[in-house]
Amino acid sequence: MMNTINQFFLTALFSLSACVSLAAKVDTLSVWSPKMDKKIKTVVILPDNHAQLSALPVLYLLHGYSGDYANWVNKVPHIKQLVDQYQYMVVCPDGGFDSWYWDSEKEPAYQYETFVAQELVKEIDQKYKTIKGREGRAITGLSMGGHGALSLAFKHQDIYGAAGSTSGGVDIIPFPNNWSITKRIGGQATDPEAWRKRSVIEMTHLLIPGNLKLFIDCGYDDFFYPVNVKLHEKLQYLNIDHHFLTLPGKHDWKYWSQSIDFQMAFFSQFFTQK
Image 1 (tube, rainbow, N blue to C red):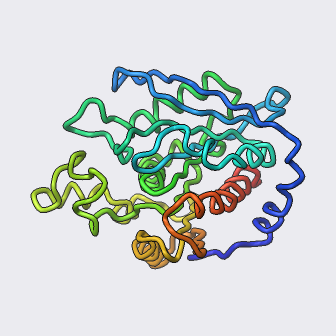
Image 2: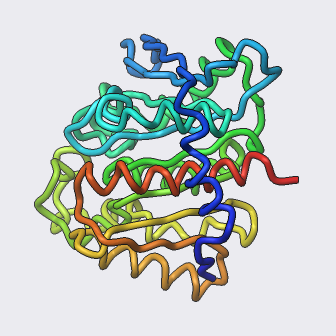
């Protein structure tokens, strides 16, 4: 069922000003993908005092269609203040221009499910002091990345304990001619099953009530708003507990620079729960 924003979110947002004097550390890595036989650029944002901490939770934060690994840190600079405030790592991998974070059966260069859910997690856990379990690992993203985050979390609940989406393309079926999807999985008319099985809204049967903490948000004026409402209603029907937030806004960085505050507050709550 839907949970509204609780006092935790309000307190967390108003306390952001306490961290403005800190300076999060930003690393840019080139992470080797054995399956794709290439290096993938990845931004890692660490709290200013990370060296003094024993082990950190990790939020994997995915970019949208036509974006790249540096989008979040460049377009939403205050994300570094949020990292200092909440004291967990944020990892932003490059998901390709139009990968949708799928493993493509046709294209060896598009194996982004394996990269994000397996190869990248292994690399981050080896390189940094992380909490190496699903209780210390979450994933979210915007637009194509929102689709990717939820689909990866639904399919890999042993890896992630929480997942989110902001303005996510959670149902691709209403968009048969958009965003290079046909390049990745073929035309909807010729292979409708490929489209159905890759839509997040058709993966809800994988969820076990209470096993995966979920936060979904979308702006009222976003073209993905109807499919996000549809997913919310389906999760309600299936008694899958989740937070669902709607705010004024379109499918743009003005909205995402605001929604990330709520997203990161939610994951902080997940990482610090007893």
